[in-house]
Image 1 (cartoon, rainbow, N blue to C red):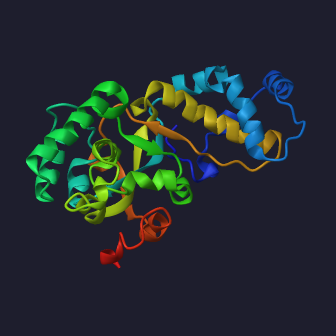
Image 2: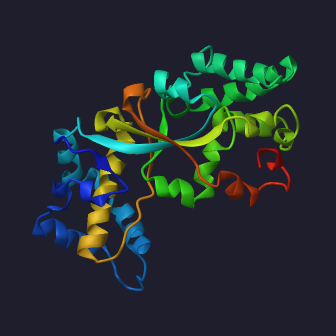
Length: 273
């Protein structure tokens, strides 16, 4: 299979993921109750308890299509777009990594005092060490760009330079530290962006990969079997870097300041207007 799967375009979804037999359809209809169902997500919640990621329709597809590519979206704040076009999206790597050097250089450029740099890194290390697979060896992504625009919790991944781990670590020192200079520079410098990239199914974390394909089966069941619309709201992660040749586009998030001002103190972003 050579076609690129794009989760914001159901026409690209593999047709074999809706080619179930009568036995499978009977099984689903037996497990799903339509009593008091008025919205698509009520069916989805019931499907989650079935664990379709373990069903043959998913496992067989993955066994035969690991080289199939999918297009997904990474949300981040970018200081230099050329770095991504040259280096791709690079995993953090944890202690003593290139990412640590990058963050330390960033802190130096915005003139954060050295003693505070070390205090912030105490918290960064704790996060890196707590969940190494997720925090140091993966690039996280959303399946659909619309979700980033629709959900403020998704767009906050682009709220500050250095990403959420830097944000959490600043908050651990002082919840209002980001409002002060020079820390505010991490919120003001750079550009909030959505990076669209492609990767093979084999490049996605194994558990997330199974759930991702099951999500397509969910889509077909809800739309074809029951006639409801469906919204894919999947988040996943790779098992390593995203090479620069896999980046499809880099797009600045529209109206980002207006979105954030609904949750931020008045005047915080005035210098950018």
